[in-house]
Image (tube, rainbow, N blue to C red; front, side, top):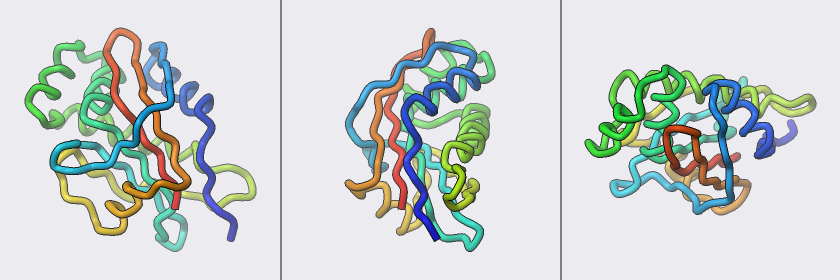
Length: 160
């Protein structure tokens, strides 16, 4: 079976702009590795045999801004989550839907079909294989993402 490939940054930007209805700017950034210090939302993608294929990791700031912008929640609602150090339940639900839709970025002709298998809100403990993949320094795309009218956060996409 062939490998899951990293999505192109342009495809990611186009998808986010369409989903959020806002301008999105991407720049190469530092990796996002979830920890007690770096609270992150994580989407876990698997193939038809439930093999781990990819993860999407958004730091708390990006998760809050994306979750707010998709539902037209004022920026202040996102900032409150960031200040509290945890994602409000309504924003977490919105981010889970965003990462579910992002599965389409991995589903290219000639490559394994993947689907979202799980979503972990910031602060939730990650399974060992997911935590290990998040720290891998190969097959990853690390970005700083700015959502127009909301703010900036970090995103990492890692494929197994």
